[in-house]
Amino acid sequence: MSSISVPPGPPGTGRHGSRRAFDRDQLGFLLHQRQYGDLVRFDDELYVVNSPVLAEKVLKHTNSTYTITRDLLGDEADGGRASEDLARWMRARSLAGRGLNRSGLRAAGDGLAATAAHHAESWRARGRIEAIPALEELSARLIAEFCLGPEVGQVPAQVARLQDARLPGTVPLPLPARWPSPRRRRLHRVGRELTSEVSRLLDRRRRRQEDSPGVVADLLNAACDEDAITREGAISIIVANLFAAHETTAAALAWLFLLLDQHPQVRRRVLAEVDRELAGRLPTAADLPRLVVTEAVVKETLRLYPPLWLLERTVDQPTELAGYPIRPGQRVAVSPFVLHRDPRHYDQPTAFRPDRWIDRSAATPLPKYAFMPFGGGPRTCLGAHFGTVAMVIATATVIGRYRLSRTPGTTPAFSTRTILQPQGLSLDITGRPQDGET
Image (cartoon, rainbow, N blue to C red):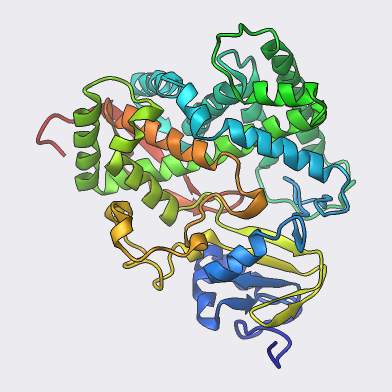
């Protein structure tokens, strides 16, 4: 163990540490502090991890050495080992993950692409969209249909209302966890409405025809019948997936369409691949092995702009990292944004180079946690595979039919209030370019 009890950090690190510098430029600060090493002291209570090896050590031991102790509002939440419902909740989470895996996506057939095509047609009719709201509407519908089947009731609209309730117009001062603020009252009310609708749709799935395609809700209903999980646990897992997957997928798609507009030569390659492999039809999950360039664009977008740009864990048991002791109550942060731009693992790390993901078997393999756009460990985003597949299918569907370009005079900016989004991005939607056009 190191003879020094705390890791190095930026000058002036102390009780309040680097908070002001971080608040001025969060992403810039995180990139700059890499110079102090693989474990950096942010302040007395927070350390920042800058290596895949240490990130793996932290994230793999979530639910044991480390816990998640903050909810959507930043309030305290019991995510530790002492929570008697944690084990059952994790079982429910694992079952939902089975529904979001490769076999589940194959069963989805043409549904994902058909939904994407329907939304894209409405965008074309309008001629212009605000990227984040439009893509959140699309992704909410995609994940709702995948979890609950084609009949999704009011779920997509309620997910949107929950998003609005979560994000006030200004960032409020911290309030006591039990303070009945208007924001919390509205969030809880909208959350109850979404929970009630998901419960209704779960009941409806029990009456489905035996030969209809299965969805995530069917797995959870079966687990409830076997008393493997509680009904409340099943509902909470679906609600969590609906909220998390729609937001991250929408943000990543927004960055992707912006990047393709900025790199017309890559967009032409995607269009040529879509034309060659699909010949005008809608894509399915079975087409993914042939959409090599499209998938590489998705992965490179997730590398440069991971929606989950900062992950935080609270220390639950005394342990050490990189030879430094850390005590219960301290926190450790991992930034996928920083890990994905590490020159030790990526050549030209700030450049948009989708080819780095094509035939990677011939290249030096990446450390496991050098690419983690959806987190890692037992609390990794359940929708990670779904999000990647949905992005490939949506990209192939939309790019094959329309041209999306940044609205002239608009300049999107980084937004890090929740996930990493291009705030203020507006896209013009026109017919697809003709051969030879850019």
